Length: 415
Image (cartoon, rainbow, N blue to C red; front, top):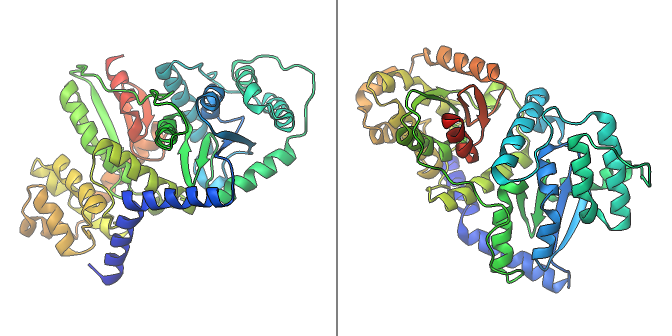
């Protein structure tokens, strides 16, 4: 491992540590007290985002629970570089938010989504409510009308351009890129999926009663689905793939389903953009998800480029030895929690050994290029099922994206 790689790995440990998290929170709370500011939770709403339709339904209940001031903003939507495939992104967001709403007992958005005229009407009504200080009181009803085809009254409306420009600027200055997000004291919480983290923080700070979260994390059940298959798309460079890998293996084992492993190239190696704000959020979100799941994480050695290529070069060998899943698991664990440098022989040898393979035999396959055809076929398949990022799943004709959607994978298996 080079000195530069060693330093970056140690820096990642610090950035994702509990200790730094505590220091950050102490700093933000101290700053708030010095400036005599109230506890403010900033919320960013994109009327055209179906996930915001879900957050709109819990905003007032959240405000009623905690001694904080929820400051809402209206925004335009994500920048182009944050959404590599807008059509596929929109389709997946609609399907996923509908599944999530059903799972959580919330009102579903419509299957097709609103048209531009309806979005414009909703934005005008929301902008007027922002001016009147009634956003939290009105956002649920406005969102319901927008996402269920309801009629908007011809009452007061306000040009939303100024409100959206202000919201876009604030979102960017805080360092994020997408709607349905909450920001409090230096940390981001995206949508109803991550609201429980914010609630836990506020309760720990004594800002609300110790109550169960408004939106609990869905549990997995021990259902059986013999004869079914789970296509699992992942990347060696994806920390979310690491968090999902052993858990989906366990799900397949418990349910009796076949697990079909489909590695793909990382987005950057496929020429897809990943904004800096997105990368930063992913790292910190993975760290807290890993802590909740009890998964080691943080001693990172980014395999982007040579590390991924060398890792994929050994896929055929691992499969021939009947150790494909063990090898992929060891690789992901090595680069995301053990600081293994897959671009070096020492680092990759450590990974290969943990997978139960013989390095002296495996190393002879490092120059092979056969893996490229496998990965290209998987990428074509990923596009065919309407997705582009990982970890993703195809189960019973349904496309599912995200390490936090294993409950949806299980539901699809038994539906």
